[in-house]
Image (cartoon, rainbow, N blue to C red):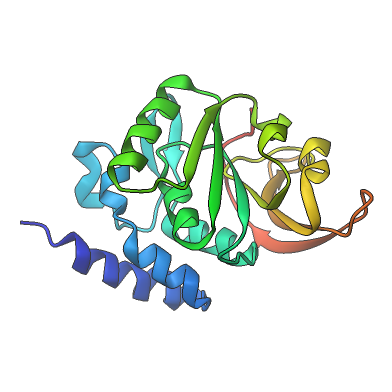
Length: 209
């Protein structure tokens, strides 16, 4: 029998702590979420490999390190409301739910959204709401947000996201540039549409649709 808890512990030490993630709340959250329950059954044994895995409909579950890196960069607190763009399997939403007060997750593919909703409920994450829609529009009905994280790369930061942030709110997303290069960035809102931008390094994500 596969000892998923031990595999998870090893993954956290090797791929998360070992690559520089230090925020205790992020390490604890990654260590609690059963990633094996968020991948297709035939890939459960590969759940703790530090790589993206296919989940159907041309989508993937992000590698654990990238999930941890983005969540650490978002500087989340226990009272925060977070917008998660691109629910996918629901794994990142589950990790976010371990840290934040409330998570709103937007998925454009209805089948993935339905499966993620069921998976999250079964795992006991009742502070996550999954909605089907256009992630680039955000989720105005649930705004404002303390942080917005996107699991797909766009060519610009959607204005709706900035408008839906609280002053001091953070957006963490990958941006695509001509030539195919991508960069993970953090946008911090200062209110009245004013923001600052910080680079977090090169990445590779599926396109934001």
